[in-house]
Image (cartoon, rainbow, N blue to C red):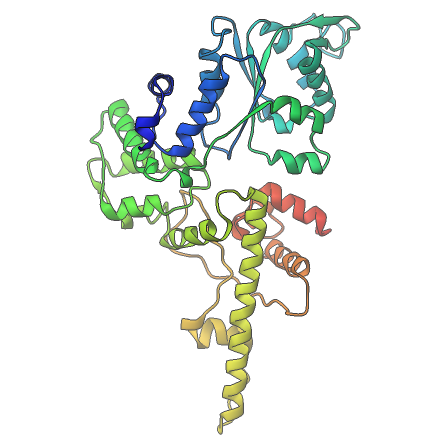
Length: 414
């Protein structure tokens, strides 16, 4: 029995109401979980990578809950400055701080009787986390600049793309608040794990663009479908829509081929995907996947460079004619191009050029050092190559900026 026949009537209704496209078992399971928890007044934590569509799930939960006729407020916690977030969430009294010319209700007071959606909840400062924990435990809060305890009756649904267990272990998120928020957890699958949903979404985005802007629709051939299916999609649904919108604009009326996708999805990026899936699987955390990818790359480089060193040594030993001294980098990048080793990492950007830039110098690693030392040296050299620009360095190493910042701090590379 497939995922479509197992889908409940409520899930089918929710998909139609919110325009959710896809029949992936992982997606259907997440939707079923949201529909089942909706009637129960429990806090819910929604987890998933950025761009997977987490914002639809609190709306589904609210629409199937007894609070559906009360107010629904969505708050992006990562977009509010740390100095004002307490005032935004809980309100303030007149004169509580400079600029507080009058009393103001916070989101929790405004949403009384309804539901509040806290997006990017992992970005909350610790002081605000303590206030939020009190609301979850007792329904009480105090406005900024006040000493009066107020009550509210609000259901909380939160979402994050942060690895919360790691955040708790590192002291960036309160453990007691984490367990209070995650009474029920819903995990949203990344696009790369949704199989043929990628093609269904691509067709929908193409049709939507054609209808909205009155241009001829694009078609997608088999070669393009294969490339779409085997790309990692680090930006998930948001990135796919970006790519399809550009194709629908500049190639309207045409049939899209794999060659036409090259500027957005380089062939090298497609070859890289199976390694990620087979080595790390869908269950590994984003941090572990990035670290393991970096370590695996180091070992692959070490193996190939050591093999080339041995080959060069053997050629030098058996050569009867005196030859000029050839450096390791010249041998790899110039004299023996078919065995060239490049440390350039595929950059997952829809704006990537199909033509690679000049490859950086080959980085050698040393068998006698630890993984951490090799990793530190690779990050240091990449920072030097990119002039200290962390965003460019993260793209080159194929890791997130957050992971790069953590590694720079951990290895003392500020």
